[in-house]
Length: 396
Ligand code: NAD
Image (tube, rainbow, N blue to C red; front, side):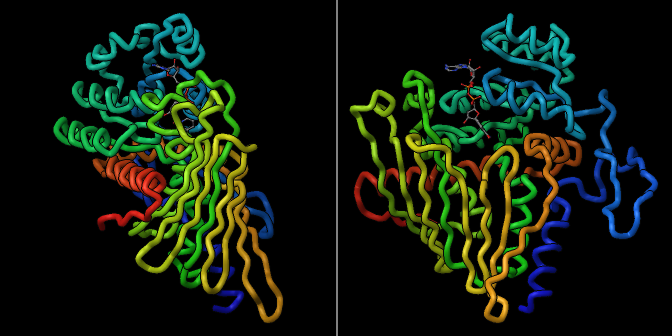
């Protein structure tokens, strides 16, 4: 591949609009407003954000659990969503929920407790229940949402076991509602551009993947360090990003895993769950993915994917903002780096809008329950491999 072809394959990838979102047939195409262009040919065209659906026709979301993710990321993201609006809150703390409802223009009648969750059934503005609770509560609330016939967006990890994940899929199918798992990085523009460029052959044949996603946990009493509520330690929380990225970017499923875990039980944070985990995924094509994750190191997150023609790196790879993509390739005797400038978009708005589009257009989500289930099956194999000190073969 010539340099020009390489740059084009990377550039084209970065310019490709979401193949599984915001297509030409967008439910909102009629609302598009054009800006006249006043800049010269060397400048980018200006484009107004949107088009946005009128508030009354938007898909209404009920947010279940008002913790850090809901308050810091999800609720603010509605301001830049094209198709969604928050219409209900479910919380154990009514005073807090009423304050938040007031800030986001949600009627007090749209504030519910966990014990009155089923009353969401009577609220016609609620189309989607977004479960943002500790992992060990996902299965219960997804199943309860399905029973009252609401579509469900569920935070990652989907559950605390593959058995729970299967039950959740069955409940949603039986109720005829959609289930999507909130793998936000699969909707993030840099990750999507990288996936597209790999599929276009920009790296050649891909043989290597290296990734880490780690952070330092503090409070030993938090639910993330409680096995029943979290389902594990760093692996299902942050390590899951490396695992899911290896599958998403390569478009392949691993056939074998090996792993090592570290659990210093004399540290009060790690009496129930692992502090660190390193795992290797072998794929049928020969791709080997080496991943590491920890709850006991300073925040670190990157990935590098290596082909026989070039490599690409995302660093940071899984951040809410500021993910950076670069490629490296030998040109003659010069190692040449390119760093495509990919406009930043709010990942939470993108994933919520994708689910809204699926409901409006009666399509299946890009990251359905089966995507979450697959990761649970692989994580269980990772724990099994670490405990048995033997590699584990995965069924196709
Ligand atoms: P958090 O601890 O900040 O919030 C959890 C909320 O659940 C709180 O409001 C808490 O009061 C409520 N809750 C209800 N029952 C509870 C119980 N029995 N024990 C503890 N809390 C209970 O957690 P968070 O960071 O908001 O995470 C929530 C979910 O979102 C988790 O599944 C997590 O993995 C996921 N998450 C995803 C991302 C992402 O980038 N997609 C980032 C952070 C968290």
